[in-house]
Amino acid sequence: MLTIDRCTLEARVADITTLDVDAIVNAANTSLLGGGGVDGAIHRAAGRELLHECETLGGCATGDAKLTRGHRLPARYVIHAVGPVWRGGTHGEPDLLASCYQRSLEVAREVNCASIAFPAISCGIYRFPADEAVRIAIDTVLENLPRMPQLQSVIFACFDHAMFERYHTELRGRQAPPSKPI
Ligand code: ADP
Image 1 (cartoon, rainbow, N blue to C red):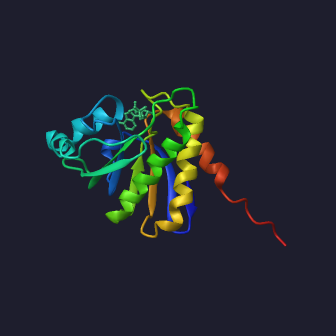
Image 2: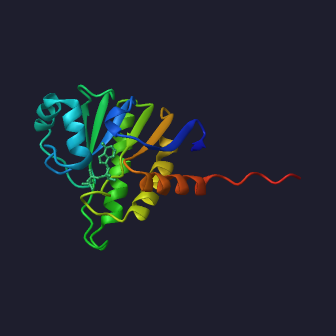
Image 3: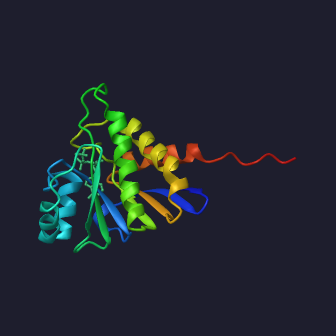
């Protein structure tokens, strides 16, 4: 766990659909009409009403994010972010992934979220290399914290232990070293 000012960043092994936070982020696709992986799990847990709300949004560009309500989820909102498909890294994938995190935080700020949970966007079916994706996720959240005074908790929800270890190690690496005694 890493605490910066009033905000904690932590990794957890968790099914993101179970988290009682203001907003969970979905790793969606451009149609916003559901898919596999975490997207499918969120739609199943939130119910048909989520799909109906998504149908009104007109899709979403890669790197962007759009807001819906959480419907039957414990979370109040779902922020649907569209990550890039990994195509070797020379098609702007790192910037597009950073943009997902940035836009998700901007959307969360608009509705005053104090807590948000992210899945490892693009790290499943979209095949983004996990170590680089984890660095981008943490970097982008940390860069945006000064503009997010209402934010108190960021959870990186990991579906398996290997992903948890990546976030945990990376977060520990960002911890300021203890100050030396004089
Ligand atoms: P993408 O298409 O963006 O790659 P995926 O849903 O395939 O999205 O995978 C993104 C990450 O979410 C993967 O690390 C996957 O293991 C994880 N994941 C899948 N289901 C869940 C869930 N219910 N809660 C949290 N993470 C999940």
